[in-house]
Image 1 (cartoon, rainbow, N blue to C red):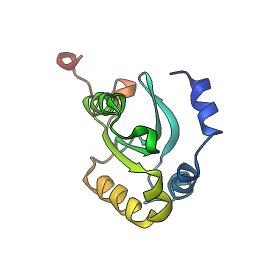
Image 2 (tube, one colour):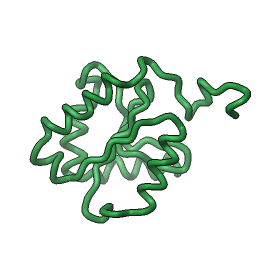
Image 3 (cartoon, rainbow, N blue to C red):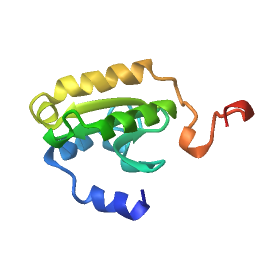
Image 4 (cartoon, one colour):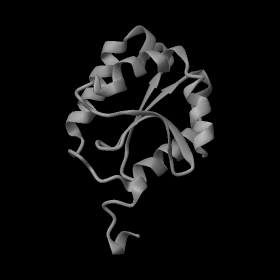
Length: 127
């Protein structure tokens, strides 16, 4: 996906994405840098911490039982990312629990992991 598409999506964030972004932006959450609407491969993810290799997706009802989301998650996981998905409703009504789950994933994540999207951490045998 293009940088232009990612920029357009940043201007069209849902209420749930805006709420979560308030907590994740500017290293407010545990001092971890997150980016929003960031391209990774052919996909654009809602939020990502490249240093922790964590992707956070905030979904509406159109994502229920979505095969493309499942394929996308498998691809991202194959690139070394942990993918967390939350429903809009949960982000809006129970933000604290969503942040606790993100916190747990950050605690389990490797510190300053190499970025697979930048070709870091790949050996000659894994390319």
